[in-house]
Amino acid sequence: MRGVQIFSGNSHPLLTETVCERLGTSPAKVDLGKFSNGETNVNVGVSVRNQDVYIIQSGSEKINDSVMELLIMISACKGGSAKSITVAGVDHVITLDLHASQMQGFFAKPVDNLFAEPFIARWIRNNVHGWREAVVVSKNAGGTKRVTSLADTLKLNFGIVTTDRRRQKPGPTLADSTVFFEALDHEPTPLPKDQDPFVTSQPEETQALDFNDIPSLRPETPSGARRPSELEAVNEYTDVRVRDVVTGRLVQGHLVDDDYPPSGPTSMPASGDATPGQPSYQDSEAIPDSMAASVISTTSSLPGDHALGGSFDAADSSDDEEGSIGRSVEQEKTITLVGDVRDRTVFLVDDMIDKSGSWIAAAETVVKRGGAKKVYCIATHGLFGDSSLEQMEACESINYIVVTNTFPISPQVARKSKKLIVIDISSLLSESIRRHHYGESVSALFHLND
Image (tube, rainbow, N blue to C red):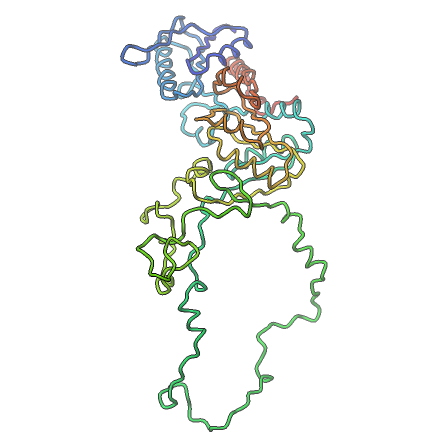
């Protein structure tokens, strides 16, 4: 390709080399380093005058350094009178599976947000045995659009796993009040007749009431109405849509049995020592004071580590449930699976794998509760923060972990994992560069066919 210079940052040089190889060229020479004080130094080694410049820079473990390096490379190329620069925030932007599509609105220049879905769908068709009977499942509500799109492409059924991040022990009710039951156990003391305002001057003899004269409050059934049959009553509880919804308990980020001992913060606030013979505040099943129980507010029943003046679940308000699963070690949560996955292969799909909490929870749910026979965790970007890859590797409910090579994964890490599969996405990037350089449409890249 004439008139094109492709530069690579330090974040993912292997991806740049693969893209250039497909385009029949080589990466342009650039020296990237740091001064003694840690400042990034960029020295462009080729002329970029009247050239179309493409800079490939992915995310990395040192994202701040990668962004600054990218900005300095842009500045250096603009100073060299480049004809155009295709990278974030310059003349054109080419991205791959943005975490939120709304991000495109922050750029003042044209944005081509490509999707890895066609490559993932092609890999599934060519490598997964019996994929036509599989089910695509979203591990949270925020990823349903992505999951339904892949399910439509493969013509498969889909499901969803949701986590109740606000599971709290029910607060005290009227049934917990001992004052209420004490009032029922004792007969009320009648007032003298001369002090009772409701007693009227009636004869002493007892007056019999005729209950037949009291009109019925129950509405009459129209004569032409059909009463529900016994079969219909049975079908109400055997509806297949109801059977496709299963729930489970999450404790410390893992699925537990129904008979597992309950855990989590108590619904009563801590207070002073209990009176001898009376239950203490620490007992979540008991009410410490009968009068206080009747006026306990819902706010005071929240866990003690949340301030009363703010939102108690503000940190967990995003679509990504990674932060909520496993953040509170003791808090119990409810996880729900909607969809029939029994004896089927399940594709758990999201845009990236950063932390492992929600992936493991969803995989355990579809296997142990839903009865799935095999689970593929599929994402475009494999960030694998902390030790998430090792944790997913150790999870018995996960069979394979499938990601693309948009994020650098060291060969040492890849060799240690027996479940990790990396899909090469360089052909998509190289074709988008070629089409952009020659002024061709890139719409065909959004719907690749075999």
